Structure formats: structure tokens, C-alpha cells
Image (cartoon, rainbow, N blue to C red; front, top):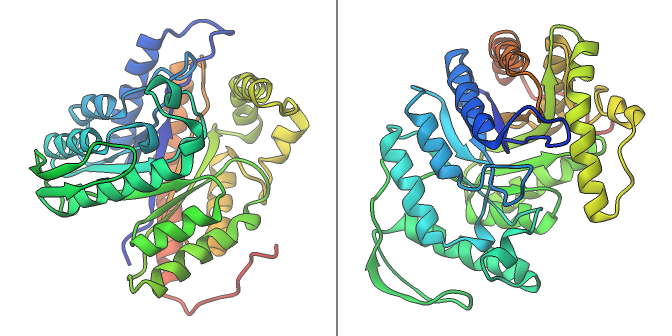
Length: 355
């Protein structure tokens, strides 16, 4: 079994209400954060696509290409590409190019998009939300499978025996499916033989255990070998738990309240925010030991292969973010990898999904 992977992903979030960080500076900070993540031994760095003023990353492949020039080893993934509102040909070409520039470190993480600003922006209808993703994923997989493609669908002009270039260094170019809580998406990933990234952004982690089982069962029934599975979650680290919680709260509150207003949810409270940091909660905010304990606790539930943490930092001081990356890479990652490697050598032990 390959070693357990740990990494980071970001939307390049800013908090205009707090001032201090421009979109330009935030993008430069993201590149610097990826450089440090590589240096401290993290395995994956991802950037996600949005089309709104508080998330200045709208072109993940461009940002990842800049990161490729500053890093040596770390894998580079979108987190995510909103495939439903993009052209799979261009997505494939961009990430194949990134793969060549990075010496085979590129990945695509494809999602339907929990934020839907891209649909009207690029001329798509939200009532086609599901069919757009299914069709465009089909085309993306066809593009990576063969150099020349013939394909037709409902939402895009047909392709008749056309070559798509460049071809990536990795064969096949890794494609993950990212989901937030839709059973059908977990089943689809398993049937197609694709790795699954499950974002847990609310509730107790054990509630999401069925998604891992659905993915594994669908893969087996479709004749696929065991597929990689990732847990993606919010979090932040500092030398002690209270410092971590206090540091992440301002940006988290502003972001969640903004989304709550847009979607008609109740605003987040400090008590609810703190409850998420508990062992069974959904966030990984705390000291290095707390984060270690929580990753290992969730590994008992999911038996996942990868953990990616999203920092919500807004206008937080860059030095504080860099310290959090150091803690994740130097203090958390070695302990987690060693413990999970030890578990892999032991007989299967008790399932803890009821804890």
C-alpha cells in the first residue's frame, strides 16, 4: 500500500471586510505557501476554482504552473475544477501542459461546483447541473484514454477523430472526483474507477462513513482494484489549540456568515465553531497533537489514503499561515504516516464508525 499522503488546498480566500490583503498579494502568498509545503515534506498542494470577489483563484492551472516553478516534489492538484461549466478539452490540455512543466506532478480534481457563479458566467443553465457534469466527465476521461477522440453529447459540439495535445507525462493523467455529500457521485466515481475526495465541512465525521463504503463497493462491483480515497476538511494549526482557534475565527466567521446570507442559513456562532474542533467534529483546528489525533481517529472510520486541509485565512498574517504549514509538515505528517504504516502491518481492527 502506498504511504499515506497529507497536504493542503486553498481557494486563495481574502476578507475584504478586514482589509490588508489584495488579490495580487494573496496569489503571491499562495505560491509561497506551496513552496514551503514542498520544503517541509507535504505531499499535495491544491488550488480551487471560483468566480467571486472573495476567492481570487479563477484559473487553477495558471496558479499551479507558477507553483510548479517554485517546487520540486509536491503533487499539484485542482481542488476543484468546476468541470460542469468548463470545456473538458481545455481542462485536459491545461493539466497535460502542467504535467509536462512539473515533471509529472499534475492531477485534476473534478467537481460539480457547490458555488454556481460559473454557470451563468459561461452560459450554462443550472437545471442542467447533473447532466453537464456527467457528460463532461465522460469526455474528459475519453480525452485522457486516447490521443485521437471521436465523441458527441448534448451540451457541446461533437468531436470527430481529432487529436488533443499535448499528451501528459503521466499515463493516465490522474483524475479525482470531489464530492460534498451526494451518494450518487460516490457511486459514479467507484463505477468509473476514479479516486474520490470527500469534503467534510459540517457535522460529525462518522456520518459520512457510508460514502466511503459506497465508493469501495461500486468499484469492486465494476471490477476495479482498490481506489484511493481522500478526506478534505477545514482546519488550522498553531503551537497551542487556543491560539489556533483564535487565529482562524475572524476569517472563518466572515466567510461562513457571507455564505449563510447568500444561501439562507443561520450565521455561525463561536460555540458551534469550537464544537467542530472536538475529536468527532468536522474541523482540524488545534495544536499539532489534536490534529494528529483527529486524522488517526478518522482513519479508523474511513481507511482513507490522503488527507487535505483547507486553511481559511482571509487577511491573516502570512507568517502565521507559514507557521501552520511548518507544523503540519514537520510535526503532524511524520507521526501520522508512521502510525498508519504501522496499522497497515496489523490485522484489521475494530470499526469505530459508531463512536
